Length: 113
Ligand SMILES: [Zn+2]
Image (tube, rainbow, N blue to C red):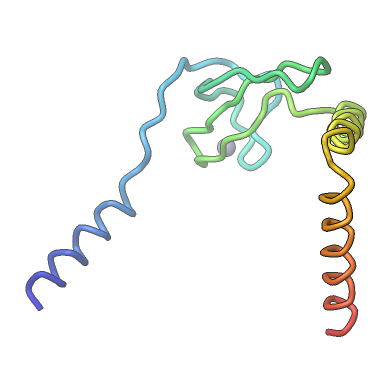
């Protein structure tokens, strides 16, 4: 009983604690999608294939973490196509058959709801 009460308080403390993010505070290229803030904490820089380089920005006002600038629709479409083609080259005939069978079963399950 006593142990459960202490454990409960510890869980509440840990779930309420904010995760500390490190990085440099910069002016964003695009405002935050949620709150419109024009600056944020740069926590990383990522390259999306050879299509775009974006900062990963954490908004300290609303806690949203997102890419800055966001990927364009064209870059997203091109990247998804490249990813699909790469994965298609990696798949063996056996794994491809398993995937199609699994997707077929999911389609049947979805249609029968
Ligand atoms: Zn925000």
